[in-house]
Image (cartoon, rainbow, N blue to C red; front, side, top):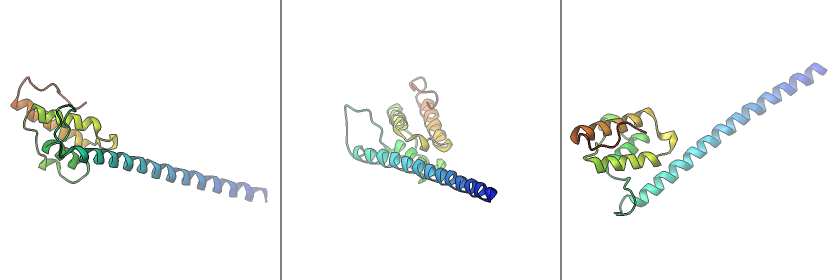
Length: 131
């Protein structure tokens, strides 16, 4: 009898640990989702405005990188920044992009943007690599 109780207790403990991992995964996903919603909502509020005070983080090239981050666009279809200011918008977007969205593809897109602008404007690009 004693062995059955011990075995039953071990099985119950394993189930609890398994459920705890599931809950932790769901909570992690929920936090990622909240970060995504916050980032996209704040970005949408700025996309149709002109600001001479706040650093720009929206535009065709930064929007393209965001589309890559969210799986809506492929890397080969990336819209490149046209100048150092456009690249600056991409860098500002990068700082605000949720950490879980900074994947290899997005890093590659940022690197390509830096290289493209650096070739067009040698010596004028303050960034040599993705932070």
